Length: 166
Image (cartoon, rainbow, N blue to C red; front, side, top):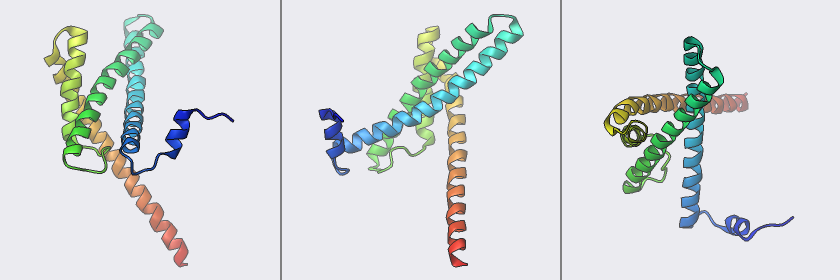
């Protein structure tokens, strides 16, 4: 079995090095963005297929176009959101840079939406006005999912502890 020098250096890296922390944060952010962009692409494909079906256009072409547009737009918004989130929590010396923050979602919607609006329509403000509420809605959904996960973990721990007491 052959290992490259990159793989060897990654395995030998300790958790207290700055490089390890940066790469770990980048890996977490990439997973965060990929999960949400995949969901947005799926929802965009459903919207495109529905629109094409109702208007009598080609369903496959509209579905793919809508999915790609949704994925690209939300990628811009979520990359901006993660950058803002990292900057906010870096200033506060927070150890957990993947924490959810409504400010980062709002600023990600504004900056990512402005970029997408400028690219697609040549006007940034309508894009920011369109994507900011979407990003704030994503924040609310993320909070509910996180709350649900914490509740399920707590229930699981309590069930395990109750089983040991018997």
